[in-house]
Length: 90
Length: 190
Image (tube, rainbow over all chains, first blue to last red; front, side, top):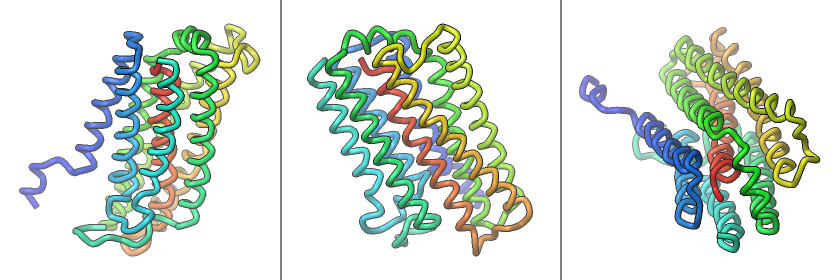
């Protein structure tokens, strides 16, 4: 039990990661950094954040079968559509 | 949900997951519509995107992520039969939700006081409708969390039966999840 307390819970690591990626995204935004690299970087971060929320916050990492992939499929579809649209204009 | 054993069904009532999928579908269509409409109005979207308050968006993102984290802790608390702590985590989550509403409300007030509305231009039509649609989901999520919190306070959940907590939590995480895409798409990507 005491040994467990020495480490952060997985959900706390996820929280820290989500915050870190959020601050990078904000930094890109407030500095008006544009172009394919930055656009797809923040989109990638968003998709990663979404997957972390699905896996660790919604608990889908512990679910077997198709339900495990519900959020992943949604993120993949949305990410692809947004990428195709932005690719044409950047 | 401990150890390596996998569950067949996601946490909470299965009905909420059907609802979540429907909601995600609607938001997905909305996001795609924004992205593809932007391809015909790149200058307009880039120009008016600069009028948005990225700092407010940061505060709101932090508020929703923190709120979601608090809800995870509330679920963990009820799984060890700690109703009191579950209630307190849910109250903290609600406070973060309230912060989101206040900040977003201030943003809307700023826009409306400048005469901006749905008819101003295509960008604002998308920005206002998309974010307000999400705003309504935050309100609904808070109502659900409040109901769950009150039931938790009165000892309505236990380690053995806490489907309601997981159901409310799943919905709230969906609200958070959608914002994770909305924030970079509308406020940052250009």
